[in-house]
Length: 115
Length: 117
Image (cartoon, rainbow over all chains, first blue to last red; front, top):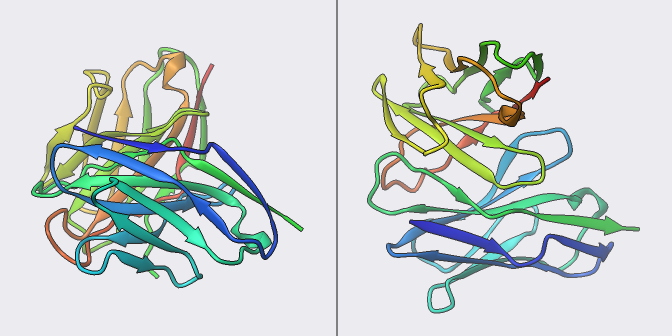
């Protein structure tokens, strides 16, 4: 079984400041890792994912996340946030070796960017 | 960009009534899923569906729940006798493949908010 812990339920920051949203997971098998974003009144959108290869993955809108196997972490970072980044962010994992891709989510982190 | 479409966006139903939530997955996707998010809680896996049968389900997905792909395009979630605690946002998702591929990833719909009164 897998579990995901997002260490901060809410993160307020000012515009253009850097941000880090923390995610730790636990699993008895290797996992794929994901970050999803949910804007108000919208569904979950894939932000970025780690499947294999380079442990640093990037999204098209400036977010990046680094897979750290020894610390079982997949923290999300952005060097300079915009007002439009205000949303809820979910970390999720899915175990290798299964054909049906069940996702286990963290409880979410609400990122609020203030002007 | 292809989308997963869910209807209705919001449904209110009386306790004990049957409700059907509808989803149209992306056309070339083969794996289908339902998740739910009770207000203030985690997004939780309900069920996965492949090759016209359930491939995995959670303990939440009891006999009151069922899924169906009736016509090759729609994917439905039925709750036979709704309870107050079924009130949640229900998300449908589809995936091209659930296996080991660099394209692996879900596309979620925007959700149906179910309110049981």
